[in-house]
Length: 209
Image (cartoon, rainbow, N blue to C red; front, side, top):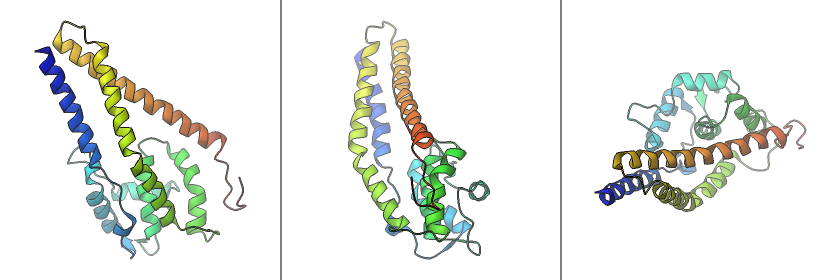
């Protein structure tokens, strides 16, 4: 009976991982070449990032979110109530950043981009190219990240394998797995914050570090 439960545990985790494999970034060519009104922006984001939702009721992006991003200087104001392709790229980056970083940290990261692509600052590369290169790199990491997640799961299953109570062993192994993944996120978040605090010192007006 215990062997069957473990198999079911592994199958359930693999189901989750396989669903995560379905998550894909928005291809640059999928973003319209015309400026969009706010309703069109939210509809586009909800449709293309639907696989990222935790529940069906979740919203990827709302009007309130967009207005708050603009109010907090994370997103430049729209031009005549329309959002450009550059706005869309920033919104996609924002979607991922906001789950990990504080508003002030995102402001520091975005300030140079805002200057270069919205304030007429000099730029040698397009925001679309930056987006394309970064997400291509992230996509290449999917397989290695998936293997690491599976490895951690198998390690967590071995920790309490000698427990006699099946339900208790099942809970403890899942708790251990959550702890492993959470610690990994914590360490990476610490690294990101230190990079922002100690090395991200770029003045877009002067073009130096």
